[in-house]
Image (cartoon, rainbow, N blue to C red; front, side, top):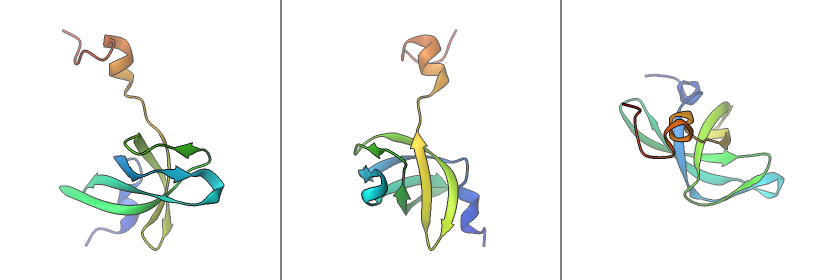
Length: 83
């Protein structure tokens, strides 16, 4: 079995918003060939549906996340891969 710290560097989406230091949300992470949920902590509140990057595994199926904007979306204006 792969340890839960395998989620570091994985992308996910918030299914329950985070509240910054006031409390965690919940993130659905693509990991180990499927998806799993973790409690998600962030420095600033993040809304439901936000794309996030997992930066730290905190134990007990808890992770720290930051907002994620795909750099390719910025290059293409959100239109997909560059041709």
